[in-house]
Amino acid sequence: MTVLDGPAVSRVPRSLVRPTPVRGRVAVFLKYLSLVLAGAVVLVPLAAVLLTSLRTSREMADGGALAAPHHWFNLHNYAVAFTDGHMLRALENTSFILVFSVLGTVLIGSMTAYAIDRFHFRFRKLVLALFLIASLVPGVTTQVATYQIVNSLGVMDTRWAPVMLYMGTDIVSIYIFLQFIRSIPVSLDEAARLDGANSFTIYWRIIVPLLKPAIATVVIIKGVAIYNDFYIPFLYMPDDSLGTVSTSLFRFKGPYGAHWEVISAGAALVILPSLAVFLALQRFIYNGFASGATK
Image (tube, rainbow, N blue to C red; front, side):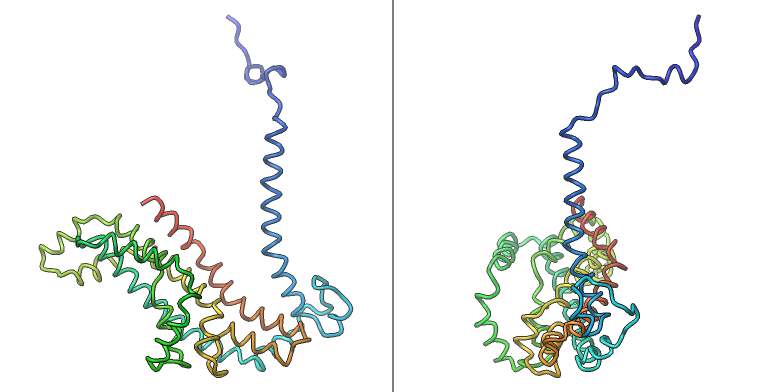
């Protein structure tokens, strides 16, 4: 009996090795090329803003948008943008609107999803369909009526005007909460009712603590959308003292229309908070979407 050693057994004849098909190599190449191009589309503008914000006006006249600054720690443009652009006041207004709007969205969205999933009433499917239809209607077509309603309520040119508009939760938030609530066993509700708990107690003591991944996902998605929004604060808060980060940056462009290095510094100040929050909490977005898709 012949005993074959290890290397002899693992050796494969060259005639049996199949070469990689050309089509597969092209597919791999196109895949990585698309990733590189997508990354460049996102990173190149950010790099241009950062490099421009660190340059002086003379350097702006001598080089392009991606030229490196002579001094990498030139923070003069940031000081000018922070003081003359009133960024501290803008961050305060934005934070006020953001906190109350996100809290309202979480409460309204989770309560709506809880009512749709746990309560059986005649027009339950119709209510969910109406939410979907409302999200398909272009918002610009209802702005005249919305403007008149906000004006009649007496909250025009106050920070509560955008809060009221943002608190009207969107269908995406309802669907995220609905998917998570459907994964919660109904037996928990029945056990709580046997102990004398009412519907609100079940929602607050049982449903809400189990919705933490969904709440984190909605908070991040809604918060980024509110932080980046320009139209609603610009239309409903025309006073300069009520400017948010987006509207303050737009108004800041006036006296510095030709000084792109100062404008870029203001843009970088607006980008940094949202970028830092997203990088710190991005795992909640991915976990929330993945969990919601599989529940």
